[in-house]
Image (cartoon, rainbow, N blue to C red; front, side, top):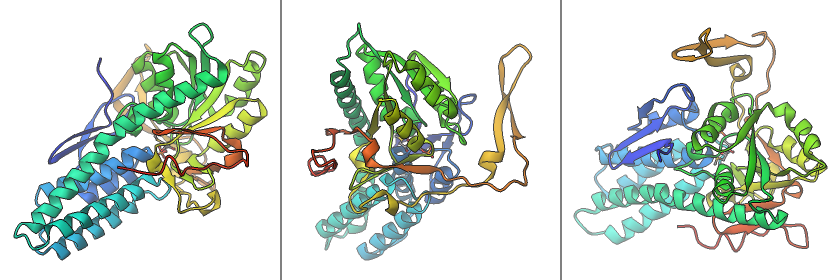
Length: 387
Ligand code: MRU
């Protein structure tokens, strides 16, 4: 079966699916330099914490492969690598995957420098080590997501004693699928795994205002995968939970993460916190799917997370394709439409922080982490080794 691929890579060439044009148009941009990657990430042509990190790491690999570093000594090469990676790190601030990837890449090139010292080809050896390390991030992400899917589905199955005769319905927010990762997805990966095991009754996805990652991207992925699903606006979640309360049909809210800090507080797409409050009120489990690359043990609590604020036009305008009178969509005619008085003041934080008390489980590729008797998350076991 065909799969959705946000990122296509072979050594020396990186193609990134332009997510601003989805679901109506499938267009890949070639990304060959750090500047192009920065712009692609900042403009959200690629988005989602793991995908951002992968595109940044690989864009620099392509730049190096194509002769983008004229440094001659190992020291100059390292300085070049550091400055290019530090530049990329500034593209979007909230998701920690990019900065975690950069830390690993810097370590890899320092190890390579020690090994290569004194060799005439030291410069090339360091650059090749960088390229290998960046490619490893891409390869590892798919494995990681499949493990998250399996662990998450098993955890939910156990919580609800779910079976093909007693399947679960779930709600998800934003887009955490193949489009946000190298493939399979994190929260959407759990939904995919539930579906594969015949444990999924129905998936609900929120529209996810203001950028509509839910309606543009997640609903597209769910339709593509043939998963039974329904789109709701963000403001309908409470009504959905209350309708399902008696029968507990909504078993869980499953979301992704941009940054999980030491105490388990989690930054994710704006609106996640509201869903967590509603879920707790209605007795619905709240599950965060987060690869260990999204965990930041250096920040103690959610108050330490920098929340990206984006431009007002994301609230006051919208891009759409033209709908023909017969209901078909003309993907070639994209229109920008004003949906508010353009003079209104706007607050547009891209993320919010869900306090750890509202989270029932954080599912990583090493297993589901739940709070101990002290009400605290402890990530020491899942964070022991990263590569
Ligand atoms: O602004 P976005 O679209 O990059 O936000 C994405 C999210 O909030 C996702 O839930 C998160 O990055 C996890 S993606 C696997």
